[in-house]
Image (cartoon, rainbow, N blue to C red; front, side):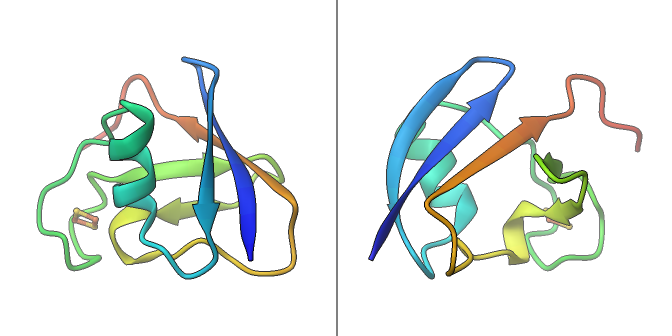
Length: 79
Ligand code: FES
């Protein structure tokens, strides 16, 4: 099952498999999500979904049950 993932503010949309790592998807889209620990503890990779939910991309796979997902990259992550 695939869904469309749209990255803002660049406005790039790519196709992704459910369960795929969001970092891999972003990479394929040519979008770079800042990362640090890759283990869910530093919050460097924090992005926001279209429903306002804030997630850490390094520990979040593409969720099932949606046809489209919009991911907002914070242009100014707070460390
Ligand atoms: S890279 Fe550290 S929380 Fe994701």
